[in-house]
Image (cartoon, rainbow, N blue to C red; front, side, top):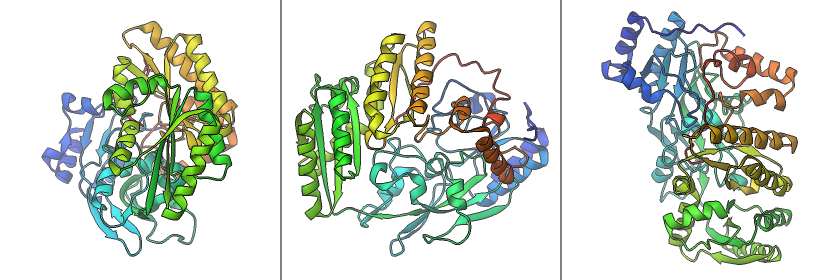
Length: 487
């Protein structure tokens, strides 16, 4: 890879040119201003950008990128900063392009089932905009009240309803992108199957290393006619995971299938007072949707399968308000963790569904081995686990044990045929795992693709791939795990 030019201070004339592009008030360069942007939700590794620029149009982004190329200044796009792997960490300083002001909903075409939005559009704002139309935008990360659609595109975000509806890439038809040299291109379009290579699919999940997204064409999904939302209460996590296997094995594909163990229940119940039994080993939040004639039958099957796997009870949400409260408990679960511990670190791994009992047993063993309490909440239907390691970051010994336990859990995910990330991405956090996931030939191919888009390496340098991530980060000591935002 070509050596990336990194500088500690942007030349005064370049800073002045940025102000002419976007306006004086849209450029932050004072240390106390840019300090806020030194990291995303992954707070172990920090570095301040030299300046933060807030474009409002594609033309602004083009001008900023071309200026960075002229002065050989590294640049990195950023959304809301809710990402959890250091994807928008300004490793080499330089210019941070904050896209939060590019938040317009430019077009909604219900007849052809698409919308065109700016990358800074908050995920839930599109959902709210579509209320009453009979359509919705399906990807729903638990941080959807803050995260942006551009950020979702960067990391190919998931969420509770991905089991049935898929992740972000399944709902992006196209994107307008400013390439790292300043050229504007459009990947995909307004229809399902565009001719040629699937560059949209390639771009989604590239974590800002292929260019800066300035518009997104998203697929809109019809609202289901009916929902049935249930809460299965189990004595043990093992019983709950066996119920999960039974449901999927029966050919039922729930819209969502979420597991929370006793530790999470202890945090959520005092916060939201839903009536979760504090002595339960685990609860399963299960939702099926579709036609009225179908959902009742599926719900009855699910109840029977839960009971066959020793469910203490299966509750049904009898009103939209009860359904909303159940989902509030799940999506706000991480906000309640502060009741259990002053600090926490959440991992993001994936295993085949049939390996859920095995990985959960390993997590329990790792918890005991390192004397670190670990609680669990995860997207059980697709094997995406989120063990939450509780600790006090003021205690250096606890920090060391948390890091060791985290590495062991992620390595075990790989051994079981899984991955070290289901939706948070690689960023800078998990670069060291890439050699374990991929062969040298795989990584060389990925590097070749990135160089085709980003030959100078100025766009989001030192991210995702070991060849880039290994250099430049040695000075940043991994001294403590991250305090994480909601998943």
